[in-house]
Length: 227
Image (cartoon, rainbow, N blue to C red):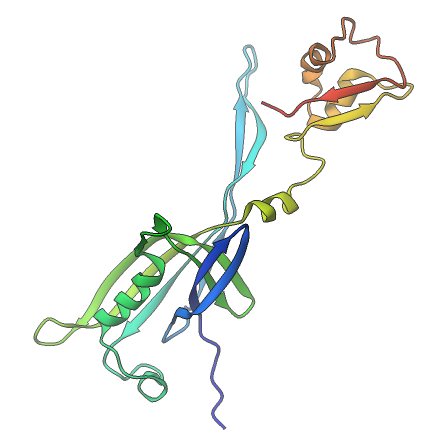
């Protein structure tokens, strides 16, 4: 029995009330799997260039959406893989249109291109197209393209519910309330929350503390999100 490899598949994805549902009736399956793909992770930092400091200090700002990118090949000659056996042969222009209809075409009801799911082996990626570049590499004598390579890049999409679930509850970007214990100091508590003890004056002001050295055990202090 003929064994076929799983092909990379890009499917339309609907987002309703924070949930995602895949519409496999609107999908594009590649002829040949990519030889590789890249998965980018980016963290942004704010640089605090305080007066008198020789070097700036970087503080965490946010994580950027993840990105994936890869190259696929389209063939209209019928010699690549088993395309003619498994499905009706399509010319390259029709294949490009089938792909762009899913990942690039503006959807009037959404007022934007639609979300997609990229599925290949252990890779499951929900996102939207960031860039698409088509290079035609083989032609008929008439000029009709017979082969094309396509560079695709997708930016991650998460629902608000998913973002909330992934939020680190100890993040300095969230509000905290701490009960003061014997031996606690305001700078030490600020370091625990923000990883920076220099916020003690701001926290003292928020909590109406006139003497930051005099905090009472048992009292509750409010630590606001970082600005």
